[in-house]
Length: 66
Length: 150
Image (tube, rainbow over all chains, first blue to last red):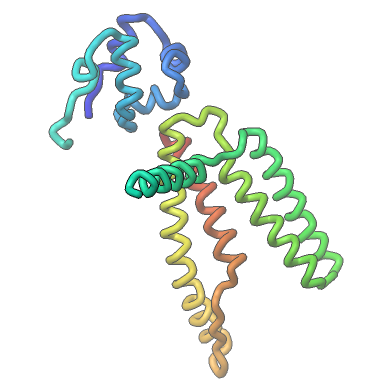
């Protein structure tokens, strides 16, 4: 699963820590998602979608491995 | 009647969910570590003083297991969904390695005693304390190891 989380975060100009606080997770979780080491739950993906004002498909994209 | 059954099922489901989700607050990690260290020191004192009281040993073993269980079921500082997943993975790993340990370790012990004491090799099963403490140690090690790796 690929994601544009880092780009979206840069657009909003917020740090991993700030994003983590806004959606109620730890900074390590945000870091793991950005590095594609952790795939977030639907709830978390929807929270990000709401925050970035983008659809989930705009933020996350299926990889050829998925 | 059907309505009654579904209510019972819902009640059972919510009770099981409560049990699955049960966790102690984060401060209990420190309490667990404190109790664990105290029992560890007590074991060392017993060993050096040469006191061989089975009741004290049994009590200390039980307290040590409970202290590790307290650490194991206490919430992390930031218990989010990734930490929950890591926790589940660490329990699964601990269970699998624990079963293998319980099966393989007595065989290794037997082979070693066969080499050391060829005329009368000893076969002995592991005790519940050894298996449980091994599983808890493996769970905690993997939990913190996987968490750091992420």
